[in-house]
Length: 409
Image (tube, rainbow, N blue to C red; front, side):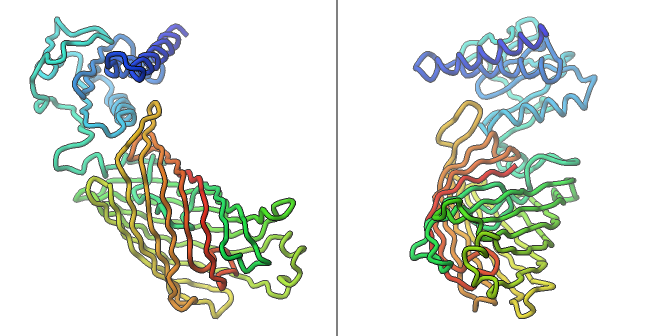
């Protein structure tokens, strides 16, 4: 209990220092980070009394080498709170204290929270044995290298920002102009419940990584112009995938089932759909390749799919899919969360609709803890022009503007 109270005090002190810095007092971010890391080490790893120094963008931590598994866990923790800044994490054995890098020898190593003069020490960390650079010069190690093992964090093929049918949790308001062909529908709420779930990830030769898992989502939309916001349609999407990455190249291969079901309230209010109802169901083999540019700021992707076991039997079989994304640099920090601008455009063509181009545009902000593996929340303005994405309504061309909140684990 005492250790937990000490850790809580360290964290609260860190937040207080950060707040004072925001109000214009002298910079204390290093001391805040030292206190926060010390608290996490005590509460999460039961490590106390170790020396933590944050100086000139470098975290220096003395840690005994007797437990390599614990060292890996500590390294992952430090990487997760570094937020992609230009810093290095050094885990050094207490038997060989850090010497030249910080300018402190074994007898002069400062206590937790103490700060050296701004220009103290000028050594190099190149010879230190256990170093992780978050932004290595000329390398892709931390921009593209994901943790491995069962149920890993992150996704090596990241969600497609502007794809209206990418699995995830979302809620969107959409205003149709002109009215939707469904009984003059004007305002709807579109929701999705599901996500991409990696089951295992491993390293392959030549710096490749492979991941496999499941994707599952329910897409549904509701007519907000009715008293009870009647359900119009629900699409069920479930399947498996394998994803591969080599530095800035990533690929995903999917096999999934989708089926569509009209809402009972729609059928009650518009009995005509009892006669017009069609069973829309199919399996699809789908493959997409993606390339990132300029430290993952820009991305382009392209791919396609082939539909199997279609209903109705005359449903088109071939689809193509392509687009581009922008992920801007962080412009604001909320505690340990990064806020950055994002934008994307997504195009789809289907032989069933005479290869007409469906266009989806989205732009807004993304909030995340770190760029590589943390969950992501997006607040996006949206525009769509093309065929309806919901079930049997694909025959209708629609146009809408809207606002959406999206969350990906």
